[in-house]
Image (tube, rainbow, N blue to C red; front, side, top):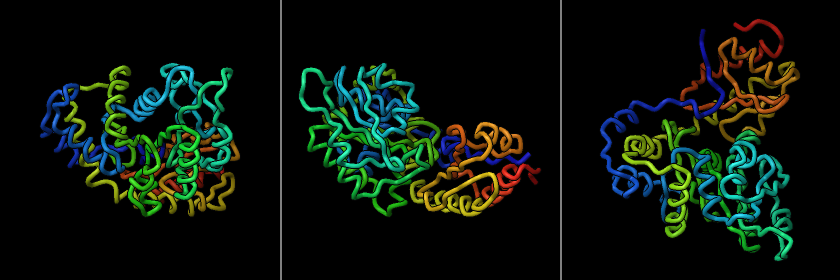
Amino acid sequence: MRVVDLRSDTVTSPTADMRRAMAGAEVGDDVYGEDPTVNALEELAASMVGKEAAVFLPSGTMANQAAVLTHTARGDEIIVEADAHIYWYEAGGVALLAGVQVWPLPGCRGVLDPETVKAAVRPANIHFPRTSLVCLENTHNRAGGAVWPLDRLDAVTGAAHAAGCAVHLDGARIFNAAIALGVPAARIADGCDSVMFCLSKGLGAPVGSILAGSRPWVVQARRARKVLGGAMRQAGVIAAAGLVALRDMVDRLAEDHMHARRLADALVGIPGITVRPDEVDTNMVMLATRRPAAEFCSALAARGVRTGFMDANRVRLVTHKDVSADDVDHATSVIAAVARGGRSP
């Protein structure tokens, strides 16, 4: 049976160039700062997001947790958008590990309003927690890969800084946002004190994420990485794939965006599902389903199309480097057949 995996861009397999680079990577002990391949990756990554320094971590979740640990003190409060990955999908880590509480604010497709952020920052008062950090997400996962408009991003980071808060950007897919906006990733991260991005999503590396910021801040973030168990030894073996990802895989993200729009356009008007092509900013398509989403996903999986269950009546489809235009067309026919309650090809 033909399989088209649209669950996530995390299912990508490393390229042949990545495998060759991994096999031949020069390595050392990264905890001692002696792995030349990791060092090269961190230097390149920092420059691409316009920061002084960066640290390589095993996952995006660990990188976000390290950022919160570094920016905050126990008992602080952090502000997030109500559908943020940090709030939904990181197992309550900020409460468990950093000892902070979260104030989730309503947004519009993941984008916050600067006045709402400003109003949420606590004034100095013995009864209140200290608001120390605002966490943003771009692109926004639960909003279907939505991209922040640059003027709104600048307004929110400006409001946060004016209120005395640091800003962390969960930029797991920041290069998707950069491609969609036609700007360098550094422009998106410019107003943020720290930024995380993943190598293992659309960029296709098998593992790893980057956390970047000022040089003194990254020194502290390395300590947080150690606390979280993320310090690695001869990590150049995996960092080599990350170097290939940053050098060779960024520009091709535009193809994933094109495939996502192709998929969304083809699904418009099919009974049983609703899709909004105008909300496809990057490589994600959200379907609203008439039948329960979990049941809909199971029916698709039985026919070889793997999709992501989001909530009661919402399904996520994610395009990536291992999904071709022909795969998109095949998936479209299967989704249409399942939505209509008939048999797929």
